Length: 126
Image 1 (cartoon, one colour):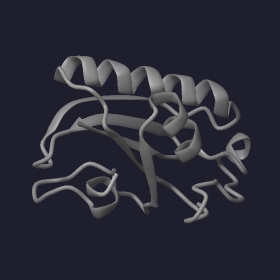
Image 2 (cartoon, one colour):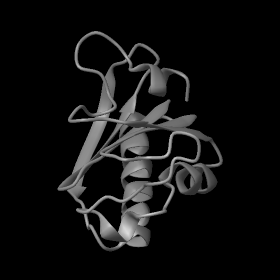
Image 3 (tube, one colour):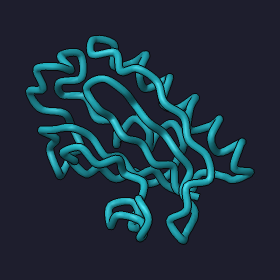
Image 4 (cartoon, helix red, strand yellow):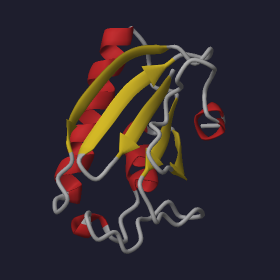
């Protein structure tokens, strides 16, 4: 099961997505622009909780986020509204927490789980 994470300037949304792109469970919380470590703990908690609700194990994590994000390292660049996240890599950190492959894709306003029609490529490959 793929864990989907959408990191925005005001909220973080997390969900579990099956192989067909169906969202099985989801949660949201406010983004803390200054406390990256606390936010990673919150995201990990929400991923575990949504996986539990979906009755699934996490096999990968797809991360959509506001940018700029280094496409090779998955690190946040100079994001004015997330100053505590600069140089941090949720890809690396969530991969380590769950011992799975994580992928990141910078998004404008779209969450990483599908609207009707399927799983975005970044999540499908995770």
